[in-house]
Length: 243
Length: 151
Image (cartoon, rainbow over all chains, first blue to last red; front, side, top):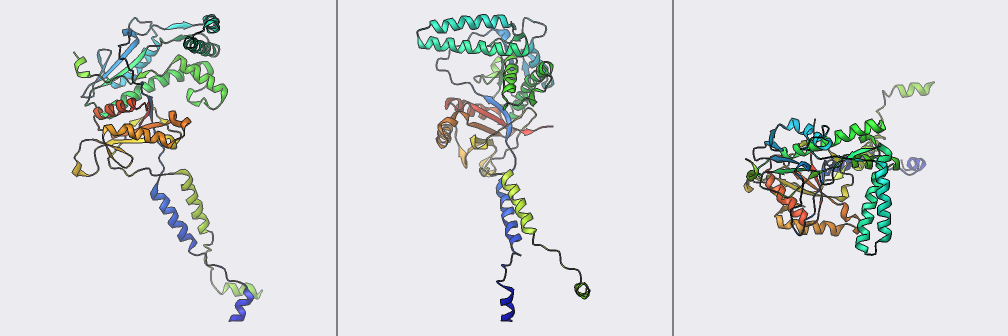
């Protein structure tokens, strides 16, 4: 017996239980980990303003969406079904009929951009006050962005900078409804962007790759025309506003 | 010739299980790579609302979670409560929580932290609005309404 073993060399370690050990580890990981990647609607909250002076806003520049405690919608003073909200938001963003109740859109042309850029360049060069210079620099950058957008898209209609979709809810509004409304508004903006991207670049907006430099410019241009403008405004008691 | 006959007389050999551990290990590695550790034990019931226009949160390491919903244990009633980390929290605990979250990350990453609100869909907006106000006060402005993929 002994002699025989010696001839076979050192006996191998039994690996039969290896599978069991691996199974145990596997089950441990199955139990302790989650697979779901978190997805949702991203929003930026406005910073708290120290001096709360009511900003002068033109009524036509605000798309007022109120949701009451019974989850009913009041849009621009009229009852609305959630189905129609997407179309409503799109109409607000585009103002196709140039209606007086919707934001006045301004045509942006290359000539105007160039003129403004030259103007602000001379302002920046001439300014001595650093704070003022900073302000000019920012405006200059804005016009330069607009110029790149015009180069990519051609002349476009710009939404006024204070145009906003204001969403307000009652205290008993259900969160489900709130998310639905947010979703519809988001969908409206996304559809507009898709349409524009299809028309000008022949590509879907969602397929533009924000890691590629040339696509980044396209994304920026499309976003300039249809900016994300859903306001997470100060909570206002909706019930008082209703007639 | 006699060799073949010899093996035949022993019957069919058992299937080798030597590669079984390798297969299981492969599965294990797959799960280790595709999943993340569960962050907390949920003390509140959260069934997320559905939405179609969702964005995926890219970097999980830069997301902090706020859970709002009715408590799991019935003894605490049915009113929605907020959970931060591993325990129930009141509104004034949001600010220290935000600060602690920022403390854990590098300076450059601080503005990139997203607070993801995982809110039960039956919740009334009041608590959500209050939480949002607290977050604004703490200057935690980037938020995400966590939703399930709808339709």
